[in-house]
Length: 578
Image 1 (spheres, rainbow, N blue to C red):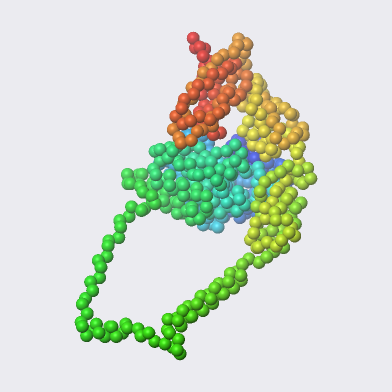
Image 2 (cartoon, rainbow, N blue to C red):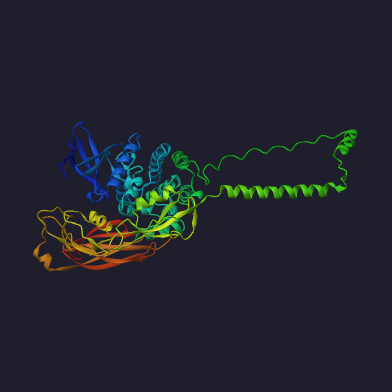
């Protein structure tokens, strides 16, 4: 699309990044002469009118929000079915990309970046909004270290689509608080949790709860104990580790109440690091103890006064109407407690949420079911997605409790299973895309990119782009099918003698310090293909050696820890330099 002019105004100049929902471009605004960012919504989502309307409404809602740390959204456009959003263009890279490049941040840089993110989030909350997708892809960092928080509140539009929420879930899952995956709506408390995940990643280079699937990640967030940051990075101060642990508490009640409270403690830590002050937890607990108060001195009482005092304080054991005073007192107390209990029971039952007849929402779209429950004061919790030939994607297949089985209280949750669509799907066209784009596109359809990637010479496509695929585009296959691809290595052909010979490679890997074993995967790319040559767990501080064969005298090795790329090595074959 580079060179295309949208809405007779915006000239696309360069592709920036992409998600399953949209592609981002830098563009020239021909009217103002400024460069802006355009997010072009994938055509597969623009065929849903409810989703397009929800996007437009949200853009109109947030256009007035303006802050140096928040991306400014200028407008929403529908150019003959081509839907896109226009916002300011901020020079820099995403926090995800910055972590991939630097591995870990210095403590001072991580704290400063966390403060910038917290300041932007506090502004969002003051405006009465919830960001909803606080993640590494939505934080952009400039070369000078300034941050910008992007895509504020766009999660509100996802329920209006049958697939948008599911498509974006993989990128959101590592940051979602346990109560969100249990069915609650995003809140200030869940944003505190996401901020804690970002701080953990900056200081460790990894997620606190990694997993192979969104379900595995959600389970770890809900059940796994907090993995101490100091076990991964011992240089982190104890107070900072405790701050992040408090942000990542399982219960919202145990977290910081607001992002502003996190911001206060982060600034305290920043000042302590800057001026060499000691840090304690709770932060600020090193304040001096209050001075003890001297006991009051009791002056002697004159004898005559003592006698008068004794007369005043002496209580006669008298009777009232023939009943001892202490018995009467017990009757009064018992009566008062009984009245209090009755009053409490009446108050509790008057305040109890009213009972509601549960409607039948099976066969409704997710948006319609949500609207039906909202009108009755009920909430919806999505338990899972299942393949179905009977129900279209995004349709309610099952609900708990069953309709008509019993009445439910107002504000109760109704658990639902949504259809993920039929068992068979149409294979998308991956040609001309890079592998990362292909993975996101396939995952949205519950398909997989095969690990068997062949590198081939191609004069037309740049290195790294997909040349061909099997099965071919638009063929219907079962969900979960692996798609094999061939990827261009550019206009480079290996020498004939290299192509005919196999060479041996030896790679030594030393594990970093830590508290738990790490799942290690090593991928090798030679002149013919990319393949996994090693995948197993290894203990911290251990060293192991991998021997492999490859085509050509030079190969590249990528080392992954718990699914995160940590090292990229280019090696010559054993003895190739002799």
